[in-house]
Length: 157
Image (cartoon, rainbow, N blue to C red; front, side, top):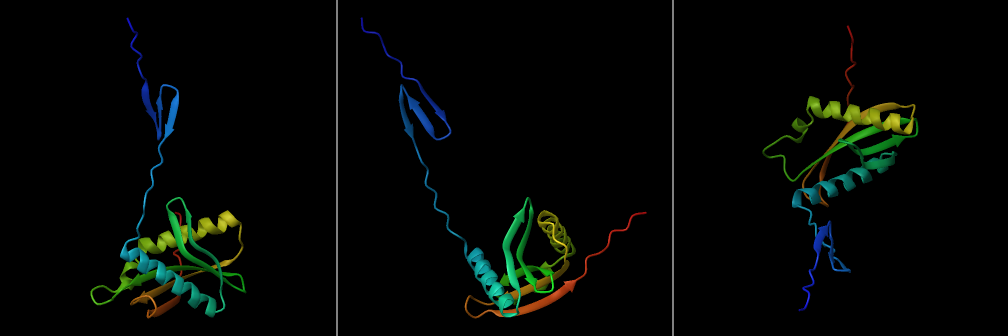
């Protein structure tokens, strides 16, 4: 009587073991950027070029820490840090892009800038700017709003 040999098959992540033979399967994923992401990336590149022409040095683009993010962090020679939010739209026909800079968005910009300054232990003044780009890559209409707002001070009673 021949003994039946049982084959053990079990999976751990992407590795399968059959007897003593190990087969590793690699999954290849293709990520295609959606059209609005391509437009946003083109807008941020255009904004970076604009800020460089204005004499600013780009420190970071798309800086993230946890859930906080800053589109562009630039610096002028006098140690003023520019925290720049970039809004890119193909058209402003139906919605004014400036309306997307809400009180919550401003607070997120302030929190992110504070985290950045603490992380790099910087001693500098912070300026909050917004750049709005409308159109298609290569022919954007750029609107620059330097020092758009001053953060609200928190008061404790």
